[in-house]
Amino acid sequence: MTILLGCIADDFTGGTDLAGMLVKHGMRTVQMIGVPTGPVPDDIDAIVIALKSRTNPVEEAQAESLAALEWLQAQGCRQFYFKYCSTFDSTPRGNIGPVAEALMAALGSDFTIACPAFPANQRTIYKGHLFVGDALLSDSGMRNHPLTPMTDANLVRVLQRQVAGKVGLVEFGTVAAGAGAIRERFAALRKDGCNFAIVDALTNDDLLALGEACADMPLVTAGSGVALGLPPNFRRAGLLPDYANEEAGAATLPATGGLRAVVAGSCSVATQAQVAAMNSQHPAFNVDPRALARGEDVVGAALDWAKPKLAAGPVLVYATSTPEEVRAVQAELGVEAAGVLVENALAAIAQGLVAAGVGQLIVAGGETSGAVVKALGVSGLRIGPEIDPGVPWTVALTADRSGDRSARPIALALKSGNFGTTDFFLKAWERLQ
Ligand code: ADP
Image (cartoon, rainbow, N blue to C red; front, side, top):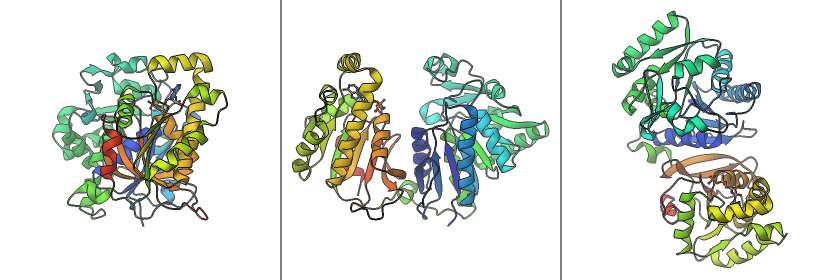
C-alpha cells in the first residue's frame, strides 16, 4: 500500500479540518495524534499527523515536524503537505516559515507555496493580503490573539520575516488564468531566486487551479483550503478511485454498534444550547465542579446513574454551565484547577461509559476532547462523514488493542465548543450507519 499524501498539521483541530477536507474530496484519510508508534490502517490514501507545534519554540517545532516527515517518507508518501491555520497564526519568529524551510531542506526541495486561503470560511488572499471576511487580517480579531497576534495582513512580508529564503507572489490575475499560467509564474519566481510563493485565491476554482499547478511539488504548505485541489491530481494520475459520490466513497467507517452517550465539557455558547436541547429530550447528569473539589465520587455517581439508562437511548453527562457560574467556580477553585478537575472527571466518565458498552460517543469541547482521547488510549482517528462543518464522525484507532476485551470499534465525534447546530447531539447519530 502507498499513502499518496502525507500531511503534518500544527495543531489537532487543524488536523481534523484538513482530514475532513480530504475525505470530502474522495481520499480515505486517518488523522494520527503525534507521530505514530504502531501500525496504521493500510486502506487509506492520506494521513494527517497532528502535532502541537503552532506556538512551541521554533527548534522544537522543527524537530517534531521533521520526525513526522521522516515517518511519512518511510510510508512512501508521494507528496507532503504542511498544514497551518487559515489565519496564518504565527509570530515574527515562526513557526510556519522555519518549519517549512526545515521540511524543504529535508526533502531537497527549493520551492513551495504558502497559501492559507479558505474561501468557504471567508479566508481569501488578494495581492498577497489575507482577508478574514470583509476585513484585512490585521483588522480582524486575530490582531488581539493572545499567542499569535497578526498585525500585518501582507503575507509576503509576514513570511519574509520568518524565513531565510526569498518570498514572491502569484497574483490573482495569474491564478485566474489557470494552472498553466500559475506554473509559468512559479518557474519565473524560481528563476528570480524565490523559494516561496504566496498565492492569491478568492474562490474554490482558484484553489483547484492552484492544486493542479502543485501536482509535482514535493511539499505544499497551506491551510486546509488548498487540499481540495490535490485529490484530482491523484485521480488524473490513476492513483485514486473515481467515486461517483466522493464523500460517500471515502468516508465509509467500519460499523460501530454499541450504546450512545454525550460528554460535554465545553461552556461555549453553541454547546450551552446543544446541552439544553438534549436535556429536554434525554436523561442528563450534571457534573458539579464543587462536588469534585470536595472529593466526592462524582465519576462513580455519574456511571451508576448512566448504566441502567443507556439501553434506552443516548444519555448526556455535562459540566457545561453559564459564564457567571463558570466564573464563580473559577474564583473559588482557580481557573486552571477547575478546568483540569472537570476534564479529568469527564475523561474518567467517558472511559467508564465505554467500558459499560458505549460505542458511539460525542465529546464537546477542545480540551475536553483531548482529555477523553488520552483516557481512551486513542492514537488516531479514521475520518468519516461530516455531521456539521468541521465535525466529522470518526472511528478511534488505538495503539494496541490486543488483549482488550472491548476491542470493538468506537465511533467518536469530537466537537470543538462553538461548532454545530443546536440539535447537534440529537441529529448526529443519523450520520452513522
Ligand atoms: P471549548 O472547546 O468550548 O473551549 P474546552 O473543553 O476546550 O471547550 O474548554 C472548556 C473548559 O472549561 C475545560 O477545561 C472544562 O474542564 C472547563 N469546565 C467545564 N465546565 C466547567 C464548569 N462548570 N466550571 C468550570 N470549568 C468548567
